[in-house]
Amino acid sequence: MAYEKSLESFASDSMPPGYIFEGPGEILLLKEEYAQVRWRRPVPDVWLRLDQLEAWS
Picture 1 (cartoon, rainbow, N blue to C red):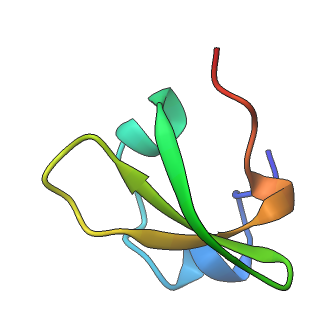
Picture 2 (spheres, rainbow, N blue to C red):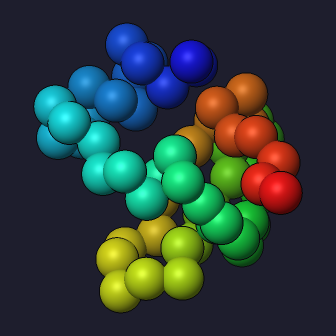
């Protein structure tokens, strides 16, 4: 998984919340190789690299 041992994972809690892997998330904004993602939960939006994202089905 591209998220593990990434710069983004080190900037967060040691155990990421499960909802970021369960989906669905909505991409709000793209900036270079990053996407701002929002989940359908009362949690903050986050920025993740595009290679860390997968299509949710």
